[in-house]
Amino acid sequence: MRFILLLSLTLCLFSCKAQKDLAGEKMEEVELVTKDGYSGITEYEAMEIRDTKSLNKFYSQINRTRKPGLPVPMVDFSKEIVIVVCMGEQKGEKLPLLSKINETEGELTIAVELSDQKSAENMEAAPIQYPFYLYKMPLTAKLLNFQKVGW
Image (cartoon, rainbow, N blue to C red; front, side, top):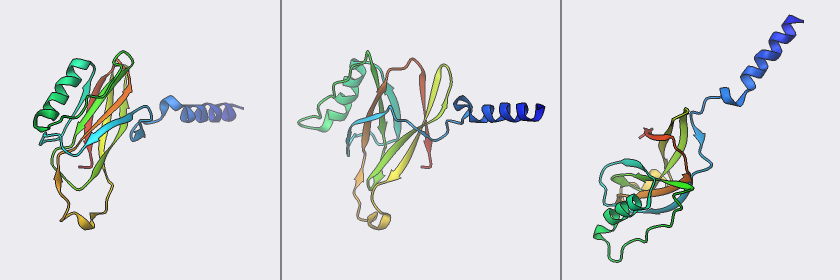
């Protein structure tokens, strides 16, 4: 009888969703809003934007060398926040994949991993780009940390 009780408790403990490791968990709530091959930012940078003023400031930096400039996307900052991933210098087209690494009560760590969209055969002829990707996700009070994975 004790063995069955112990076995049942062990199974419940290991099947509990709260006990699962979050490493590599795809972020379903993150939505790609826009992307472009030229940001003008030469080094990797990932950031969160929580207000319209900061989003406009980012776009003024992006649009500094563009005529006409890219339009600033409409975001309801009372319900959403923006994640911007500037890739720095890239050869070929790569897509950043965002996933949760760790989530605590006050902090969310997000992995930024690269995925090749095109084969490596034509990498010599591929142009150098400085792309950026703009995502939105539901509003959270948690501090967001970004970690490069596999670069």
